[in-house]
Amino acid sequence: MVTLSETEYRDRVLGAWLGKLIGGALGAPLDGRRQTQEVAGYPEPPERLPTATQQGTDFQLAWLRALQMAGPHLVPDDLVMAWLKHLVHARSEFAYARANFRRDVEPPVSGVFDNPFREALGGVARADLWGIIAPGDPERAASYALQDAMLDHAGPGVQGALFLAAVVSAAFVEPDVSRLVEVGLGLLPEDARVARAVRDVSRWHGEHAHWARTREMLLRAYASEDLRDSTICTALIALSLLHGKGDFGLTLATAARCGWSTLATCAAAGAVLGALLGAPEIPDNWRQAIRGELTAGCDVVGLPRTTRASLLAEHTAEIGRLVIRSESVGRVHLSEEPPDEPSKLSLPEGSALIHPLSIGPYVNSYRRGPLEIHIDYGGRPTIGYDVPRRLTVAIANTATRSLDLKVQMSAPSGFVVTTGSGALTLPEDGSVSFTLTISAPQEHAEIAAVNPCTLFLSVDDGSELTVPITLVGEALWYAAGPYGDFEEAHAPEQPGILAGDTPLSAEGWQRLSVAEPAVNLLADLESERGTHYAATDFFVPRLRQARLRVACNDGTKVWLNAQEVFLQHEHRPVSPLSADEFEVALREGWNRLVIKMAQCSPRRFLAAALKDLDGQLLVEAVNALPRPRPAGT
Image (cartoon, rainbow, N blue to C red; front, side):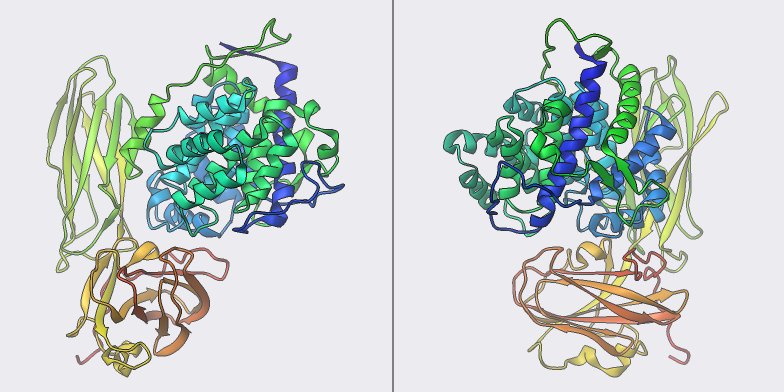
């Protein structure tokens, strides 16, 4: 068992917050630069570092409020409620996750579905909090981080958060930074991308002992266009820890010199070193370089704008004590007096966390009475016309007796549902799985933006259990091409097509049912190089200004209701960052969007999303329904 004294815990909590604030202030002016940085004067700091707001700390303020309200037995719904109440961030993955919440898409599906930034580092940037409130218990810290990161991330975006949370938790006990890295790796599947990158960094740095050489090898092996890529940034955090060897200034300087998302990487490295050293051991010149207070960003609502680090640390430590006494019983003990000898941290097995990571992000799990219920969406939580959707339901019985169940399913009018099993018998500790098939025949059903379904389970004791199943309506798009030169006008540029007078179901257009238009609406389409067109009709309930985001790896020209609204012609990488946003005027009712794209590379990439002027996605703009034909046609 790990033993910490009350004084030591408070000192290390304050150290972690101070380290995070110092690192964020150091990294903020260098953030977003691909090249290595000349950080003059380091590892000594300048006399004063600028105050920096961090999105990661904005979320942590909301999470602390959620913990205050819900207690240590936090569940993802508590975090979602805190997010919707206190955070209005509209950048990158945050906007797409918020749109999923509004569609009633629950985590972990909310983190992966139609989210082009699912592997970004938003979850990593806030993961250190979970290590701070679960000191000496890396598995508990990583479990909290899993609930957090899966709200708006998947894959490496979750893996990096688990790694950092475990490292910070272990830093309260373990002084050897190389062992901290081992603890973080122990909670990830061996084949996880982040685990591979961190292991490679550890090996390369051991062989070359030079941060710049290791960094170069990392970027070559794990190339990414996104400066907020979780794999790269988590590996750079590990590199800074290994190169710094527990030296506060050298660790932060290494993170800053590596470039990329230095606001996040320097803050994370600072949090780890602050927890490892404790506030009294952070060098005075570094502590004096900041104001020692946290300033929330302008996207935080209903929470204090400014909080001194000492008060924040006391509040965090109070919550941490509750977590230790509730969730870390038998693993961590807080004592009034320092222990006679230092505690030794055992490497965690991590099997309980590796399993949910391995089953993927498209499985929602519920606990209803004695039943554990898992809904596997099979890769996407969507439905299109005339194509059956098959979902797998797994039910486990935790009761001390066998249970008889009856299964029913409700769906919107016109939908056809086959449950696969109407009556089930579950033995004690037994489980069963079956398939749900849901289809929406176009002649009978009308697919909406959100199509709520409910699974009903009648237990032989008379209880009725329900599980929500949300199916997002797939977007209807139409594709045409290839045609000749991009600079020339082709058949899809006829006035009737651009204006919406000619149905897109006319000859020459191929109908597409698109699950994730914000990620790549051409993902399932293969064709020759040339000029292509993609078009859709969408309904908006009222006249309004909006922003249209179009991502393409080659040239694009965009018309909205026959008006040319955008033109660019340049070759770009296939990346969510290959995007342009511009303001458009939406009319009440139906709107016709036509996108012309040059396909010069073998891979086709086109994504589109509508946002309001604040950056939040317009989930009320619906293109799951075919546009009615004009009268007389």
